[in-house]
Image 1: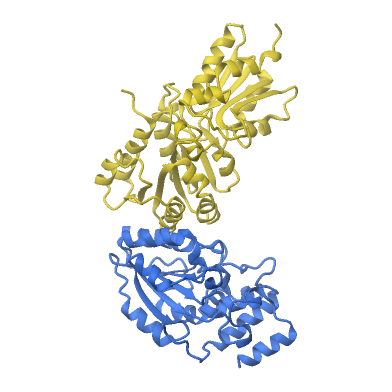
Image 2 (image 1 turned 180 degrees about the vertical axis):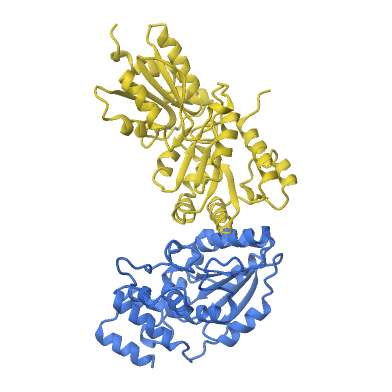
Length: 265
Length: 308
């Protein structure tokens, strides 16, 4: 297993996420911190998109299947110009477009409305199959939670993707071990390998390892789908909220807020 | 030999697939043989995808998201009841267009038991926005209704009846969203959907021997429902019986009652599947009998409505 590095990336975006939670008085901070480095890397270095024309036909598709980690997506959509300062300020407020799960019908750049776990990969397999039918080279990348992988539809979709040779599809599993609090026997790489997927294992907070994994993935229209098993830390960057526990859906009080922000300097 | 509605489904796919390169058909290991001509004529657009109905629905929504026109086909309980959340979120909430074609609704697969029955599908689907529902019970109805509605930018569900009602309609008589007045009358309105049109006409014939003239209206499109034709008839007759292969709760009868409740002195009766599991085996006709879906039950339900 890859060692998780101690360095905290993207402190500015982490602070923004905490501010959004304070302003909106809702949100899942640790889940967002777990995947923030991955999503930030994807939007900066991997995905093709046009934020001025989110439905650009040549774009790569990204779906955050573990919708409750949405704050990590929102701060990146904001950074790249899909959504505005006002959208961020209106998080979880009446009249805003950002809630606690991404919503395709409201948010420019959100390809699916997720939140009910186990839908995102199946929907993504449909997109990948559709792109293959159309002879297009757009890539499909889907980020799932490790707890989400307890949903049966994830494996239905994994089975189809392998058998239809959807090499244009890459899943990323946020393996922060939260799911193992319920099901301790959870050899995630072995499971995906058993379904015939190409498996990459990385530190989900290490951009060098992310880049190396994406260099190895060919995204062939007719090939084996790939999964990146990302070892991550839920709540990464703020030690006292890390791990599976009470901070999953907790709003910091004033004292806690100061302490979190002090850690993210 | 008369063509089945299921064969018509395969024939219509072949015809449309040749002219529409976006049409993609996915089946759950059913209809595989009859769809081979489509598979050969439309390479890369036919998938016997596997035994995984919820994911098949999500896949269809994904195909729709990139601009393709999905048609998903398998057995009703697995495609509607088991996959309901995928239909609700991935198609309907997203506002994505697509087509679901079911067989084995109600108790068409009578001897396969409760696991293979599906008589609550109208009720479930009617809770969803952006959804239309048809119940074609003859080949020409499927062909016409599908061609008229498959590209309507919504999710459309076609519930193929296992038994045809045996009535020959002309193609120009079949208009999506419009009911058909099969027989005019002035004393009572009988509204039938699916195969039960046959039962309605048998009952109407027997009522005529008692000098009761029944108007028989056939509904092939459950949603949007042709309220206008039904209301016009009921305003005239003040009496209505709805006959259908669906649970009483949430079926066509409920919709018609809601559409006509304000008509003064209205008398209403529903001939439908009681709100409980159908647990007995036997033929389709025997299960109709055990559920009280017969000409006799229909006539008996009206006996206090007429003098003598």
